[in-house]
Amino acid sequence: MDEPKPAKTAFAGLSLADDLRDFEPDPSSAPARPDAAALTALSERAGFPSREPRVAKPPPIPRPLNFDARLTIRVAGPDKQRFDDLVYRLRVSNGEAFRRLLDHFETTAGSAG
Image 1 (cartoon, rainbow, N blue to C red):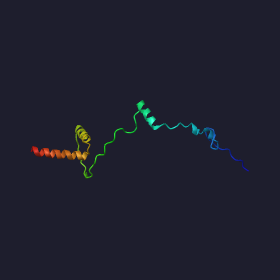
Image 2 (image 1 turned 60 degrees about the vertical axis):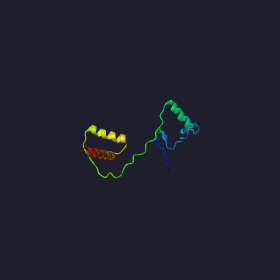
Image 3 (image 1 turned 90 degrees about the vertical axis):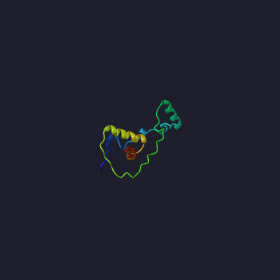
């Protein structure tokens, strides 16, 4: 009869049939989990910032769903920046800012002429 073949060496001279229990970490050597409050206090004393946001985020801007058309216009770079700054300052969407600009223009143009 054929003799059993020796196990093939898988990596670094170890066989898959080898007993590797000596290489497993001892469960008692695992570090204890630190107290969360103590860890927070220690990290604040050391000056590490928290990963959690300290300031509540503002609620999302309500956006009307009735913008059903697109308008593409070419403008100068500084004018585009002014519009973007205005939108950011007012915390409104581009469409809402455009609507307000049109309303303002119509009221001032109506009183001027």
